[in-house]
Amino acid sequence: MGIKKETMNKINLGNRVIQDYKEPYIIAEIGANHNGDMDLAKKMITSAKECGADAVKFQSWSPSSIVSKEEYDRNQKYDDGDRGKKHFGSLRDMVEKYYLREEQHYELKSFCDELGITFSSTPFTKTEVDLLERCNVPFFKIASMDINNTYLLEQVAEKQKPIILSTGMSTISEIDKAVSLLLKNNVKDIALLHCISIYPPLYEDINLNNIVMLRQTFGLPVGFSDHTIGTSIPLASIALGSCIIEKHFTIDKNLPGWDHAISADPNELRIIREEGDNIIHSLGSFRRVVSQAEEEKKLKFRRSIVYARNLPSGHLLTKNDLSTKRPGTGLSPDLIESIIGRKLNVDVEGDTLLNWDEIS
Image 1 (cartoon, rainbow, N blue to C red):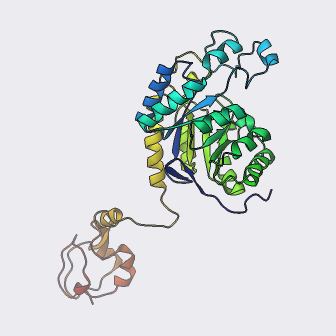
Image 2 (image 1 turned 30 degrees about the horizontal axis):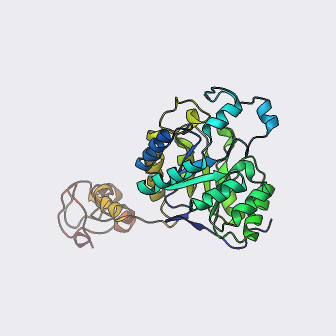
Image 3 (image 1 turned 90 degrees about the horizontal axis):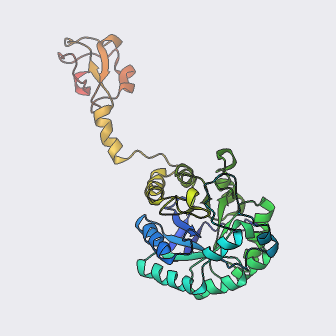
């Protein structure tokens, strides 16, 4: 493979420096969950901001840019088993209703700017790459389906902006080729997203350890594009150092559309943000450190050597004369062997801490 020439363990996404094992960059993937309704889209953006998301992400395609006539003619509905999708017509009908028009991109970008949250989107053709460049997005996201689309990768690379590359459905060799192409085209900031392109995937197919593997293999920051239901799996990925969490987002899981049922609602997104940050702060380092709070705890919770009973001056101490009890402000229990056989210099009272000046 030979890709890992220099470790790029951090990238810049807008005003954030993104790095493995740091507070993750949270992308609320609205995708097509706006259902073609700009008021709904803005409600989702506002909710994502309130939940602590760093960015919202949409999908930029048109009826002619992503699906062929042959596919439309089959009237396919993109079912992945029973995932709670709610269809209202043919595939063509839904694509026509759900795609973002050019002017809507500008409208949503302006709304995000006013709200203080990053606007981003996934392009699927050069037309949409150029549109997003005009929207001045701070980074480009490449969908898993396009990891082998060298033409699109080159078009995005020309913009010389950070690229987030999802790896669903791909082999290591395909990831290698995509990353090599981006590096060859002088893309400075690349992040990979471990992804399973099933909605939702079986737990045994998620393979979160791929996050560590991808990081070690490519020397790039790695995040997680999550299609599970709930919060446990994205939180687990954060414990493995995920620098980015991309999670489908909705304000109502019961809305019609492709992805609402498997999306995070505001409560779940807030948990991912807050608990994810807590996880990162709790990981600490590999160096063993006893905190100041624990040092103070020692004084209360550890034991000290105490006399087991009243003893007279001149008595030679035996093991049966000694015990260990709280607090830990006296002599440590691991000194007992060095005290046995010593002589008392004074009379002592049972159940009191032993002091060095009492023995010789």
